[in-house]
Image (cartoon, rainbow, N blue to C red; front, side, top):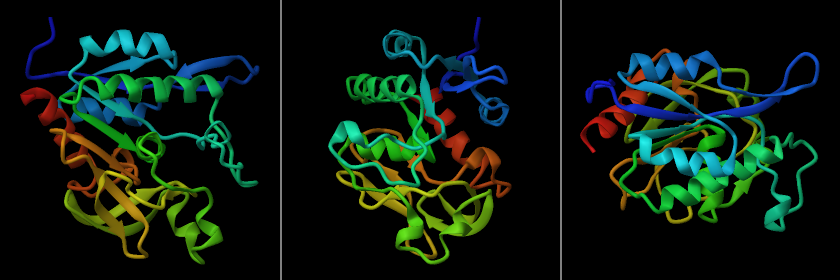
Length: 224
């Protein structure tokens, strides 16, 4: 039996082809290792819309991981030529999960990179589909490049890997930005812990901006 001190944390799975082109549900070990190090027990959530909603009552918290881009066409927004969209089954599963989470506002949630963008798009936030269109040095946000972020979660150097970002917080509170103004963290003040970060804390060395972010989620799950 799982100790109450180690809450079950759902981690959303991506869908990607193997070396023979067969689709598989997958989560990088960095996410699993980070949840374990933060004191949680990771549970992989398959990219299936119905299954994710059914699994929510078993969990104490959720991590929505990074991945390829949101397909904006279902929202009536033309797709940017630089966009590389995620598998449609994953997109359906992610938005189904976000709708299900709306019905359980006490559930702690952490969105990472794409996860934060999904949270924002779900609430009607503007999505910048390619930072390079407006930000001359946008590549500093790619390839796990390190750049400084100031936020209510802490301040420090973070590892990033994205070419898209939220252009507004919608009804979220913007709680962090990089030094070039990109929105790096959001939260819903009406929920105990509903936070998105644009960087990858599971790959960030800074103890506050890295593992510290996952510990905040696990602590919220443990005491919620």
